[in-house]
Amino acid sequence: MQFRTVPKNGDKLSVLGFGCMRLPLNGQYVDEERAINQIRYAIDNGVNYVDTAPPYHGGNSEKVLGKALLDDYRKRVKIATKLTPFMLNKAEDMDKMLNTSLQKLQTDHIDYYLLHGLEKESWNKLQGFGALKFLEKAKEEGKIVNTGFSFHGSPETFKTIVDAYNWTMCQIQYNFLDEKTQAGTEGLKYAASKNLAVMVMEPLRGGALAGKIPKEVKQLYDDSKTQRSAAEWGLRWVWNHPEATVVLSGMNEEKQVAENIKTAETAFPSAMKSDELATIKKVAESYKRLMKVQCTGCEYCMPCPSGVNIPRNFSAYNDYCMFGDEQHSRAMYGMMLMGGLTGKRADASLCKACKKCMERCPQHIAIPECLKSVSKDLGGAKTEAILTMMKSGSSQKTDKTTSGN
Ligand code: SF4
Ligand code: SF4
Image (cartoon, rainbow, N blue to C red; front, side, top):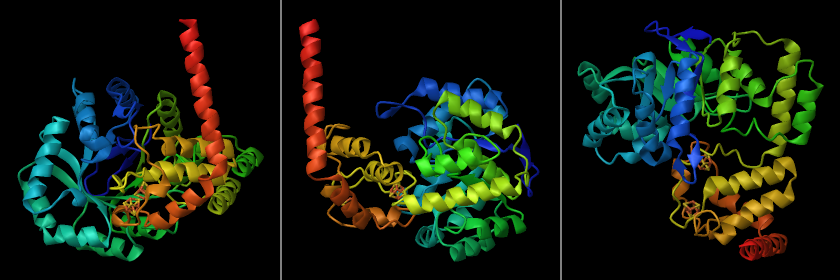
């Protein structure tokens, strides 16, 4: 494992951090046993920074992490968790949220406490609640050690927030598709110039830059002199920036955890060669051409009062646009039309354009408009036909099972 130093406090943090926003699931719930084993495996292999937040997994991420850190694992890591503006109604709620985090995480202090997902409005809201004074008081009481903020707003707001307080760190979304969005490369360099540690979230855009790769992207990787997985390309690109302190990966497969740890062992800054950087540049251009909705699957927009599963609809749509796998994308959309995931319909056509979700989307996606396109392109007769096939397939399966009994 490689380590990088936090300028303001000298902490030596592992370049790979464990992000607990996408823990393994069993049905709709966190698969605790697997999650705990994965977190502990990562710690046993050098990871010493773990990141969570009150809303992740409906409040269960902090709980599961707290359990994973029992048996002396707590001493081996720095914990980061957050103060989440959209869950606060009044100033007093800040104290409650911090105390609940301490309780769920089964610890008496948070090492890195972040104001969560800031952009202009949430920053103004927290300032109105006196959040900076609250942070000072929490530090004096020993409940938190270092302060920071995570960010999803504009480059201008980013600089304003960096300059507003003596932060130890910040957390930004950064990957080869987001050099010019949100804080971007400019923000990364600005924060580093002010001696802030920079934790990077979404290094693989919620997994979209790894896993199933569009044909033309695969061709670009195949044509490169250096052969590595898409995940490794994406992570190495972020680590190539000396200003990035920790890269948070939301891992949920044992294989992924092991692969990322292995990659992190040689995650040196400024190590990528010019031909490797040229490959990434072409890959980024290719993705930008193919990806229709820049959704990271963070689920901040959920729940939708009309029942739309917003990220799943966008995932099906991006798959459709990026991979050309029409049958699979229509089947995914069909499942939402049938209510096959939760027993209730969750497809894009349910959207009433109330725009409530848009206030929460860190990617500033015009959600109702995009959902209209999803419904137009993935709904209709072709999907109905696939649904009929799926239904008859499942009844055949039932018949076979019954006759077998
Ligand atoms: S705009 Fe549509 S998707 Fe968003 S919350 Fe309203 S109904 Fe749901
Ligand atoms: S639409 Fe926005 S808030 Fe919702 S999952 Fe996608 S990126 Fe996150």
